[in-house]
Image 1: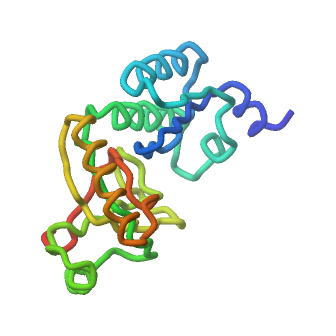
Image 2: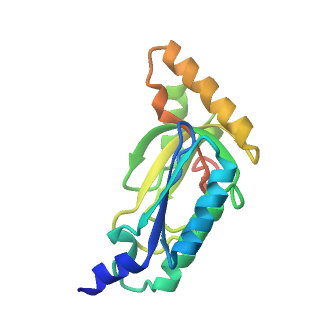
Image 3: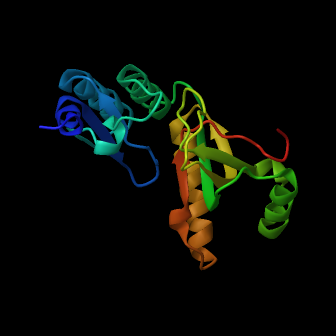
Length: 191
């Protein structure tokens, strides 16, 4: 058995499916007991969500130069804290686009004008970066959102997202682009 297959079996992953809340899968957890405790926390917070457990995805346990398994496990724990609303507020957002480079203040202004909103409503999340820091990674992408509300109250964020979804559906637009996320968002027009 190769090291990757062995690591995949020894580590666990947790995923969440919810109609409004968009949560990144969390892995690797070092024991099924820790992953089970994560499921219990998430299920208590989001009773309408489907929360699951399985072997850690291969990508979460693959060797990456400079990464240790301890750092990967700590990242999974940090993503759990994010998903539980402990590190960042809940954000009701509308996905706009993804870019291979950081968003400039000028382009944020163009997007805001196109959407008919303030530039302060244009926010980004750097994917491919860990919640603990943004080390160099070949697949970094900046996901661009329109921010509709930030709050530490999940019920308020969920209500806002459902309201915006209804508005988009009535206007003939895709309502699925609106969700609630718990991510470290940045405002390129300001920062």
